[in-house]
Length: 265
Image (cartoon, rainbow, N blue to C red; front, top):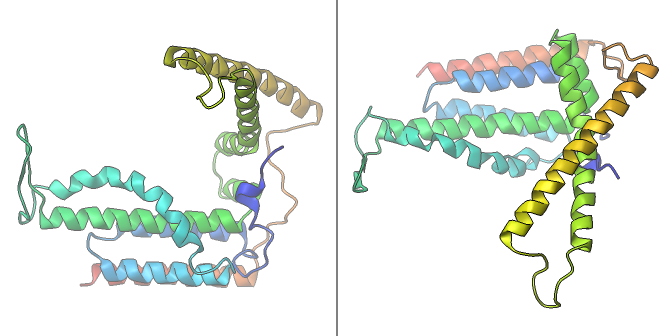
């Protein structure tokens, strides 16, 4: 069974954000992420205003004020890769940590830069989550096509999303088959030694590759038989209305204000 509800459970809700043209939501999301990247380090007031805008968008989407906030923390560990920014040679030293082979000296400018990177990542991830939660994936792909994104790229992304669930189900079936053939002594962990587990995992990966390759060939032949011409289709008409233009203009004005707040200090 394909588990589409993992990502699509909120798409059928009715709100002002859901009704926006997908092109508006995609462009505003990209501009929002770009705006965060352009803000200077330590622009706390600008970051706060950007988050306030996110809260308003959450409220208008009927998903709840904390919807994107709760889910955004999953991406913060990836932003911790920028922890080396704390030890920037610029600024005043805050401490000195002698590790024997190296001495780490965190500085005030480095700490501000690191926290700013976390804030940018956190806000950008929240905006991406809001886009995905309020827009059906085919509409996002179609919006990118309207924006003249290369068709090869949009087609690859669309098929990756569509058949990711199929591959996940294949993996679950392989895991169930392994468990059914790995019965052990009651009270003890089933399976064999670590080399045995590694060999079984390798065989499973090979079987998954062969099944995926065979399925892709069948899918290609089925698409050609149905007249596929290289363009993705959607049942939702995309037409820019007056309300869409007003929201787009208001969002652009808000982003300009955020930039002014961040740079005029």
